[in-house]
Image (cartoon, rainbow, N blue to C red):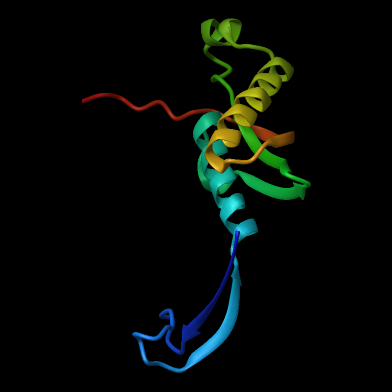
Length: 131
C-alpha cells in the first residue's frame, strides 16, 4: 500500500486548487498497518491483550506469510473441571492457525499463505465477579 502524491509543507495534498508549494513524496505504511491489524485480530481471537502479541509480516508474491508470538490462555490449575474440558495445546494452536488464516485473509484482502504461531507462555484469565 504505497501512496505517491505531492504534498504541501504541513501535510495537506497539493493541487491546482490549494495554491501551495508542492513537495514530492511517498508514504509507505504497509508493513506497520499489516502488523498492527494482525496483532489486534490475533489478540482478539486468542483472548489476550494486544500488547502481548508480536507479529512479523513477510510479503510473498501475491500473498503474505505471518509469524505471530503470543501467550496462550489456560485455565487455573485449581480448576480441575476446566482443565479436563480444555483442548490440548498443540490441537488448540493448530485450530488458532486455521482460524487466524481465515479471518486475516478476509480482513487484509490478501491471501495469508502461512502462519507460524509461537506460544511464548501461558496466561490465566482473570476472573471477575459480577456485582
